[in-house]
Amino acid sequence: MTRREMLSLCRNGFGSIALMGLMGTTPFGRVLRQLSSPPGPTPLLPRVPHQVPKARSVIFLYMDGGVSQVDSFDPKPRLAKEHGQDPHDKFKVDATQFDDVGTIMQSPWQFRHYGESGIEVSDLFPHVGACADDLAIIRSMVADFPEHTNANYFLHTGVGIQGRPSMGAWVTYGLGSENQNLPGYVVLDGGLIPSGGLDNFNSGFLPASYQASIFGTGDRPLANVEPLEDSSDIQRRKIALMKQADQRLLGRVGHVEEVESTIANYELAFRMQASVPELTDLTRETEATKRLYGMDSSDPHTRGYATQCLLARRLVERGVRFVELTCPRVETPRWDQHANLKEGHERNAHAVDQPIAGLLKDLKARGLFEETLVIWAGEFGRTPFAQGIDGRDHNPSAFSIWLAGAGIRGGTIYGATDEYGYRAVENITTIHDLHATMLHLLGIEHDRLTYRFSGRDIRLTDVKGNIIESVLD
Image 1: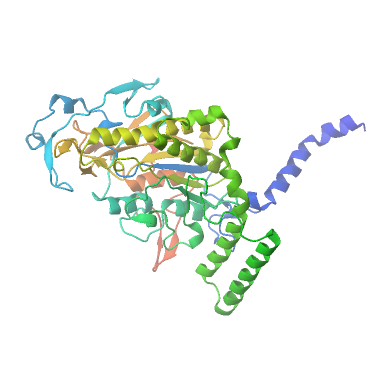
Image 2 (image 1 turned 90 degrees about the vertical axis):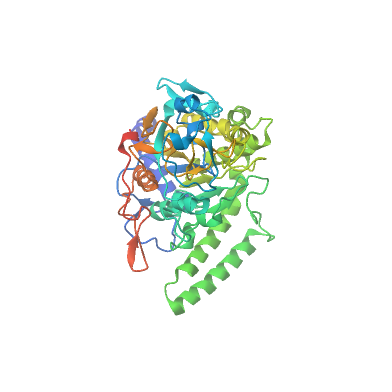
């Protein structure tokens, strides 16, 4: 046999050998576990889902405060026709958070048709509007709570009280992570921790290994990311000593999740000191990519959120399972304009619009769009009438969100509100439905992802949740 004949016969085998080598390394997980099996001593190892997944990762663009649906993705011409009139003469007005009901208020922004789908998006979001054919906009979302803290817990955990596991924790508990050198669940802190605090990102009663790691966007995204020891050998021996002491305790008292999670977290932190500096080194990105996200913007808040979006792409590119972005701290309040709606919404929108569109385009260019689910959502909407003179109060009875990416039918509108955008009236969609759909796209049957706690099997969707089939490809 000649050398050329040998190479021709063996070429496929070389790829298999390389794959076996990769699957045997720590970053790629070593062994795939069944989802029904317990997490074990290495909690973030990848797990086999219930069904073939469409999505590998989730990027959750959290719009803290409640974006006004009638000023963003749900145009209502009737508001312009009846601008300044008393809403009590037109429909039943529910009690509002601050009991300061003004007159019907038209949107300060025009809506335009975008793409082949012709979806209408307001001038608040011209860059996102240009991506309309990639979006599935749900206009009929409802929430159970009109107040920020409870609504935030409900959005993140499926329950409106403190202490339950967040959706990112549930996802990493169910699926693990494809990169053992980074956390499976990362929150990129743009400067605003939402109402309800860090419990929005907690692991609740799940093991602590599944809670979010909070990354900043400055020069030092994590504390202690650089080793203090003079050599890696000293550091390894310190970690080995701590692990030995913890395992001796486990030998005396048996299985203790808190101790086992501590051991796993120490080891992950050690590996992160090598991987995080490379992850956050954006000098490796091209100038064209940075411009796409808006990192050359004159607005420092746009530049900051652009950095978050670019880091989100780099995280999912490296196999991180769930990434959440919080809002930047602009000069006006988060998306919570009880007064001065026009300035407040414009400042917030300008900070996030181009970076989000850049993220969608970059994911598509790199072949990541088909395996990454992008979710854009806040905790509730706003009223179609003014609070006072020029603000809008909280409205849990109708708001808009959108999905894009893996398994999503782009250019889709689902659900509808009444003529004023006040109440959802068609295909009413709940937070449980959103969670069920997200898990479905990740290959998880939401009613089978459970954890035994307080005497019963608990799940993210509680005893509710339906997959939103109409937005799926």
